[in-house]
Image (cartoon, rainbow, N blue to C red):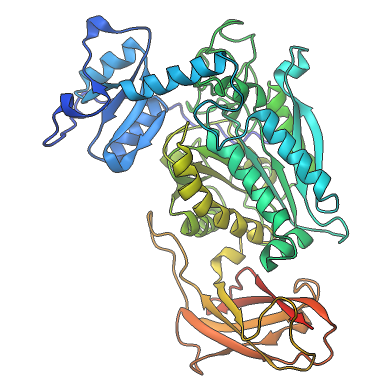
Length: 561
């Protein structure tokens, strides 16, 4: 077992001189907001806390995890105790009770108690049972492409209190033998984060529904293993579906068997540098209680064992040992909220040994969804987490997605923004799983096109076909620094044969302006279709930059009639 090294303890401290200046704002005039006096405080209340800079916001979030992160509007929504409320007042923060959030949660709980189906007020999100039914339907409808397997038990299932199987949906074309690069994605490890399981379920549906219709979806399923744990904390998620802000699992041994604060925070319970550095709590009722020992919870054990079973160890025992640049495999943990992409380490500000490569891939993933990418510690210190475990134990490139702005995200924002922006980011992640420390540094092949339709009835054999694409080396998110871009020096395509199996079959593409002299180049080639069989063919395209970096492949179909 790798344990890393001990880091000095860190405790988030709110300074008494963080004064928030909210110009031209009349607190009583804001819809859904009321003032509150200290004498009126209940056991807890939901407040908006206003800030005037992101660093202040993140210091607050390090102390109390926000329910909603309204960065663009200058406030966070927090559930606070009277003590926390008073500390924020002493620090001169402008605050107000958010009655709208309280009302929304109360209505959801009333509806749930009345026995309504689905998640009250959030019809776009499937319940645990509905998520499992959707996965089973995928496996039934696409038996060659999908397998739905039980891999462990939730805490309640283990204790014979009901509960759920821990299950994984494996997507791959079983008719094509491996070895294949693997990506493992977990979601909903925190029950109250509604968007996460639904997004990964939508990803699975997109891939299988577009197999044979979309070239990228097709080759990704043919030549990868995509492992999806859609509900990583099903017991806790079931509690959250009633409108409770349930984060942890439901272990009754911590904080009282009937307490709504019971359980362990599964994303502080992983064994790598567990409880090392002040990034979790030993108080059983705390939202980030790390459990009594590393990997104490059955849900955590299931994820750890799954990673150990399906990935090989590619990193040394020392905390400063890097994974090799040609390491394969990728791990993602999907969370909400904050619109972030985070990479290890979370327990120290020291960079991980593969920090340069993780940063490059993080900026590439964030290009597609507009998130800010950063080292996890830059948000706030955290230890015993999924991504520190996956990278620290196994050398896997590992990232957390923080989706959206709320735990209970509105369906309109989910449908119109989160799904739209994050499916392309996850598709890119799957493409990069073969060489996540190398290929993201290379250019993207985008805008693939043929001068003939790629669908039936197709073209006669022997018809020359023009293939075109754009090779771009600058498709990185710049919210948190710039990634260097180089001149494009080459582009190539392959027909049908997987490029990694036979690189000798590459055919060169030429710059449309006759000169490779830019970080983004339009390229083209004439394909001789003589000898191609009738039916669908797949064309793989990639580019190379002046640093010698080949990017990931993109694909397009060619149909011979």
